[in-house]
Image (cartoon, rainbow over all chains, first blue to last red; front, side, top):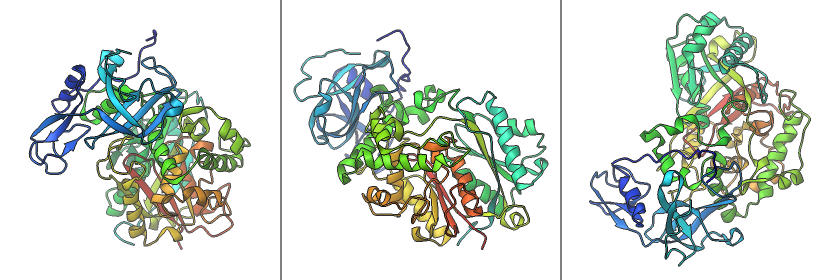
Length: 145
Length: 392
């Protein structure tokens, strides 16, 4: 990371979403689940949009999915990232979606529907967060920033 | 026609120059544009009793009222969601005027968006507040989706994949806007048209969005004056009657990142506004003679044309390539040059162009009669739009 300060806002951690960030720090991808009707939801929220229940727990994701959409960002450039930066929207096997940057996949190989998996890496402000990678690439923590 | 439809009209429009460095305060730009719009309407400053604004406006109504010596305001409101709210203050004004809460309501947007904080540079200053309003950033910003172009790129990619649209299809919007702007002395890109080759050669910003798919960043101010249609008839310009004005939020709406719906390239909030347009005005897309379609980024023009029903899903690329958006086409679009060509006044300069089209005074006025003009606000965020009609 260079000298310039990142413009990434610090995470807004609340009682509704702290489980996600705690899970990510421990290398686990957690999805919020309604404790009453069982519907999964992401991004997290206080209630189930299906049944309005405030009761919830979490399930651990397989971290496997397919690429729903993606972009390669060139400008502007923030010191928290290396450019060109690939970012993807993943359809997780569990049925929810997840946005994360994509590491280690040649950009000319990116295509909608390709299988990817979720690993974890250090992001801005030292937060360990999901990162998309080629299947099988997440056996070890790489700790990129 | 129903409710407030037809009861209020835009009677005055006024703007500063649109530049890259105004050299003046945003507050002053607001005051200058408000005075210009009141002068256009030939309404006295002291008669203003309402302001309707939308967020990301840095000049509060009390600052402008104080600076201009406006003694009393009985109505003031501010609609959230930045550019998506661009047309909603006109609805607020029409509601206020038609219900008798206020008689003269002014709408404005004034900023140094190029020489000051640039929206394209990253999260805006208010992004760093720890509250529910900004919580959605947790799920995009840390991964590098920091700017509107980056956030819209997913939708553009999906749309291309589904319907076979290409970067050139987006580029045609840019070429058309610059063609219109080239004939508009007020446009930043006056006399500077581009070709599709220029578009294709422009650098990638957030693949598939290229530099020439992005609107400008601009300094300037643009204001509108809304009064009852009855009063507008006695003023110098033909009234631009507000026959429809609506807002919309769709299911599972998130600012700029409603990525968790089945179809991320569909914008149900836009379709919801479209439905209200046609119901309020008693019109359909076939009766719209010209349109100002919010063009912060070219892909949104294609998506909006489809949501408003001007063509079928996935057909916008052909609708555009066939020339329907040209001045002599079926639906002349962004005849001022749009935010790509004229300037980025967060959509409000597009409302002014809608007024000019109804008055018959656009620099690119179509030869045909223009009775009804649709003006849309930004997407993919909570949306708004208006239909302006000739008083016939």
